[in-house]
Length: 157
Image 1 (cartoon, rainbow, N blue to C red):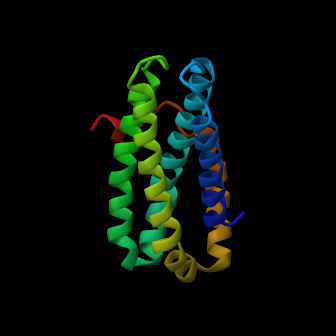
Image 2 (image 1 turned 135 degrees about the horizontal axis):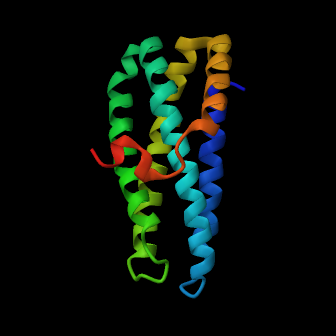
Image 3 (image 1 turned 30 degrees about the horizontal axis):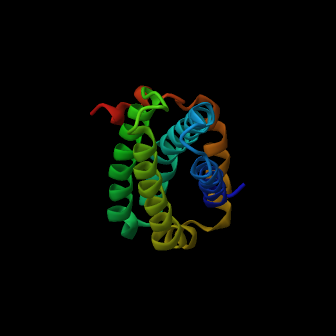
């Protein structure tokens, strides 16, 4: 699978989880915890493979995207920090829903910038074969990637 298709699929998976979370009520603390835990794992893995494999390759192939990539890394840092806070929160905490809402806003903004502003440039610069090769690398790295945001170095630096 092409790397950009794989990353977009990850984006879609997380968006579905966000929509499920948004449908929950204050009394659905167990469901909110379950969804939040899935979001934490999905986003932690996704950020890890992007930063370890995709971003360096994209930056090399499409140097004009460097500023976008650097901004994306900083956005990841903020998201991973929020994930680490959510992981330790009780879903009945009055701030849990607010923190998840801020996380969703940040991730949706990040996804929009990636998909609209610079993924097309990377696709053009890399071509199908390189993106397919990179997609295989991303898939191979997913099982090895951390699932806990506290295990991601940028979460605490």
